[in-house]
Image (tube, rainbow, N blue to C red; front, side):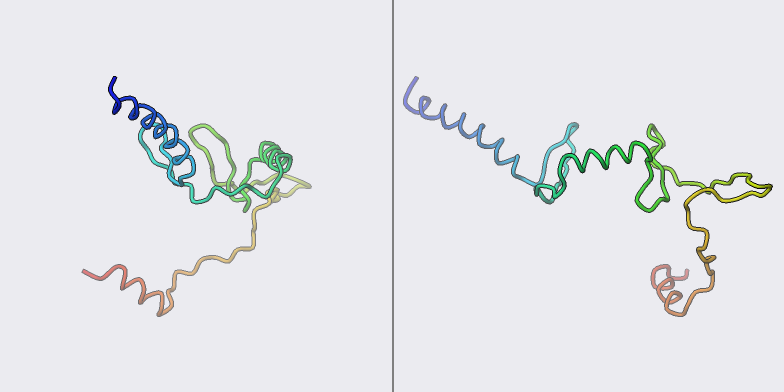
Length: 125
């Protein structure tokens, strides 16, 4: 081996080792299959491991989104829209879910500003 090869081999090894450290600090990570994921921050969380485990246990007992509108059923369906639930109690059908029942009916009449925005987005013809 000549001098160039002797000096090049440790430099090549050091470069390979350091490249892994550089990539670990990057916000762009390669995923299996050639996809690329971007993680904007690498900050430590403010919650303890026990708090995270408690949240996970609560979610496993009742897999509902924070707003209560979706339920996680897993499998191919994943998240599904929560439906209103009714039960027959005291001779009457009653709501037994926790979804809001006081939302106003949508209005199909547009204000002039909404009409102008619609016409700008969807020009006639």
